[in-house]
Length: 416
Image 1 (cartoon, rainbow, N blue to C red):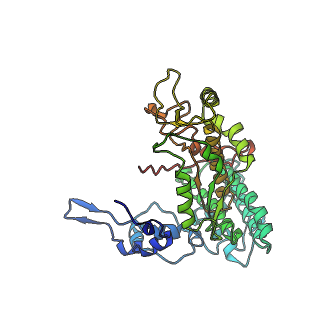
Image 2 (tube, rainbow, N blue to C red):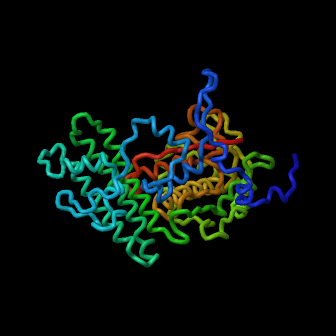
Image 3 (cartoon, rainbow, N blue to C red):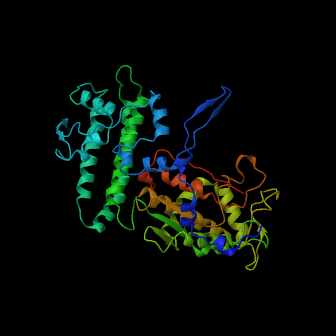
């Protein structure tokens, strides 16, 4: 059907305001006639609030009626954070950051289970278990450092310290996991349980940091859209599904949503050369075989300047790849796509924003290490796998120029 132009240009926030609230459809899970299960509607609003401060710190008294039913029967959930515990106590001589303000007490970040573990090993002379007291000291030091940075009134100072502190959180989290792996767990307690609680504690500190170090255009609640005009150098054939008009269409939609117009929605139109160098020199060679990169580069370099819509990803036998077309500027465009993904990852992990949308092309997530992943019949319009590159950058140790995360999750909303 042909829709009126005015409908296509409706602002996103107007459309969302017209939709019913998710809680209006929430129904408790129940059995119907004993034969089928009626699954409860997912309450997205509750989930989003639970992931945002202060709810993510365990501070909120709000309990969703649908979720509470499930929580009451779930015995695997450990105790919540303890508000005032250890507000005036020490672990191995290290004083808690603030004896009066319980919002900075260790009990506001760590569960009862983990606090008991820290306390029981604080005066333990057993070298196989004193690592628990050690990581307790680490988390207290981290909280003290965050409180010090948060006390700064200058937004510029907070911004300068934000990324450094968040990367330190990641290092402490990783070091703690390794330390727990080397310690001897108390009788009846699995190390896996301790690791999970440790991760939760570090993530609460990390989220608290983003919350207190954020300001009008940086941090919590900020969305960014990243694009680059060099992506227009990737020219496909007329009538191709993957064609240059996709970026202007995406940017138009982003602008209608407020990108570049609202202070909390940034529109970034240039990817810095530092991310281009990082992509080409360090990350892309980790995601793809050198032989594939050389073959792709040489094929693109041999194209006439005015060529467009030329198949680019034929294998050594010259078979396949007809749907993945391009032009002389395709490799640069693909590299820009990777660089944009690296910048986006850096911005999110570094606390500059909550999420980033990369309006780049060609796409990348179908590209395999050498050609086609899982013996696919084509590369699906993709040259360099930007999603894989972002994941590699995120999980590369900080000592090697990465962000030092232990794990990432890649979710593909592949809707055609």
